[in-house]
View: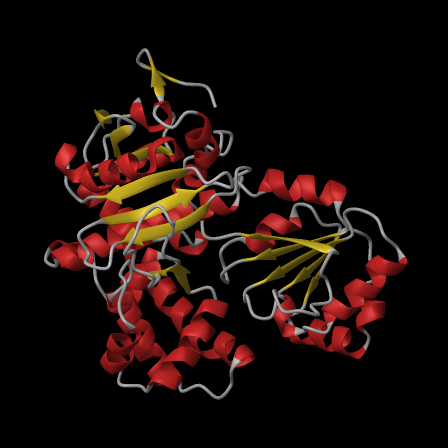
Length: 418
């Protein structure tokens, strides 16, 4: 299945000696990277890992490009890659994949200046529907902020979006033959990551406490909980909670979206917004199905927000315009924007996420406030809903179905070209 990362990987391999692809376990990194490799070394396969540990430099004497899969199992491979690149520079030598984020930004990391890093996540709906040729969402929003989401329509309704969220984006879950199989796979995935993978980073953690803390995070996904409320609910102390936050972040199970700040606005909250990376994982950990979500309006809203965030996160990380995602909230909570994309020139595009099948200008009031405060820096804003069509809500504001994130805009009743 084509991925939106394919073109980026191909371009980087043409120009640079090494590419590091980081993403959650089982999100499709290896399958994608194999397309570009002539030889593969699976570092998490114990016999191959042992050989590399014994002679990391000699292990790289393979036809290039060499795919080194799951670097975290044999981290000393980075030093060998550095020496190889320094001795024999040239593009397209090494593809490195990893399921942890730890130490990659540390001073003294061996591949500084030698490897380009990209992040991959699970399948997003644009990939599942085969629309990888469509221009990346945030690049479209940058050049045509109103048109990109305005002329769209869909047959999807709330139940469909909840099903998409509970399915998640991991390829094995997406391709599962039944809902029962999907749930079993997701539960096994969580067990694998919270035990074996976590041991690779921190063998001193308590698996039961870690699982309980992760469950608390799932209940508060897409929220801005205080640290104390989390560790009190999980019945752990603050030091343990901090360690678990680092661990789950390194395992790419949890993501923190920072609070947006500008000197144009006062009294903005600084706490990050926390997300479970994949809504299917959250659903599996909580043991909830669609009927359960419909009985809990708060959790339903959180899961829908988490699903939308999973689409936007992948689009933002792999778009040419490279916006950074934030959230916005005032200290008195009178103003709030669910997600905010800021481009490198300081311009922003805002998103509100609603479970309703139709929205009005009242639902866009926080976006309108931000527009009036920022003036020309405000590109536009969308209230994403579960209804069938898009329509304007005012100056630079649009209501759009969530499916507009991956649907081609229509021109005169027909689909626009990619």
